[in-house]
Image 1 (cartoon, one colour):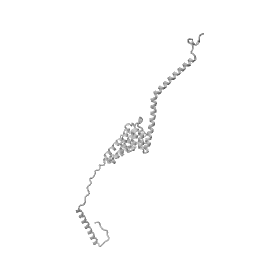
Image 2 (cartoon, one colour):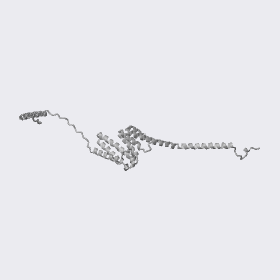
Image 3 (cartoon, rainbow, N blue to C red):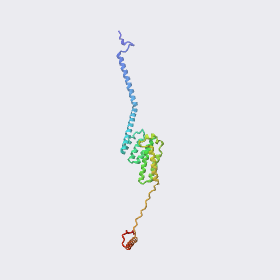
Amino acid sequence: MTDLSTREGAAPAPADLRAAAAAALLASNRRRRLIRRWIAIGTLPLTLAALLFVGKILSMYAFAHQSITSYVADDYAGSESSARGQEFLNWFEPYKAPFNVGTALAGSEKLPEARAKLEESLGLATGVEVCSVRINLALVIERMGDAARADGDGAGAAELYGEALTITTEMPGECGSDEAEKQSSDPDRDMQQSKDDLEDRLKQKQQSEEQTPPEEEQPQEPDEQPSDDKLDDLKDKLEQGTQERDQQQGDDGGGSGTDKPW
């Protein structure tokens, strides 16, 4: 008698079917794990970039908020430190970091350093972004002119006032638009009015310094001491005046009128 399972073309046993199905499932799972691994490896740079993007945006807002808060509290050193935190990987609105640093430096009266940072910001700004930068830059240069005038350097002050006036007059016409007002670093400041007031003030200061002639030191003449002859003449006149006054009093009979000056 022959075993049916050994016949050619006989159906496989259930145990063999289960083993084959398990092997196929394991192979399918391995393929899925391999695919997921490669997908994870491939998307890792995008994931890191997204995390860096979000972190950068949050840090920018944090540093900007801290810089503004410190500036309002007159903590200009703290404002400068926070603003410098915006400079690292400054991809978004790159003009703002040097703008905030320059504004903080101006608060600390570090005017040359503030001017350098604001000029850097102006080179990075585009469109209506330049409006606030130009206003603050002109204000810093005006204060430099005031310092030069206080030191007696009228020519240097007039030159600085002229530079500030040029920066102001070269502001684009868009700086008077509503969009420029929204971009302003100071919401309480009217951009167009600030520009007009600054121009008028700078023109007056520049003209004042250009029209003021330099003061020349007058040579001091040595005090002259009266000679002996002059002293003798003065003494004789005094004595003569006294005699005439006495004589007049005698002629008047000793009246009570006030004496006349001699």
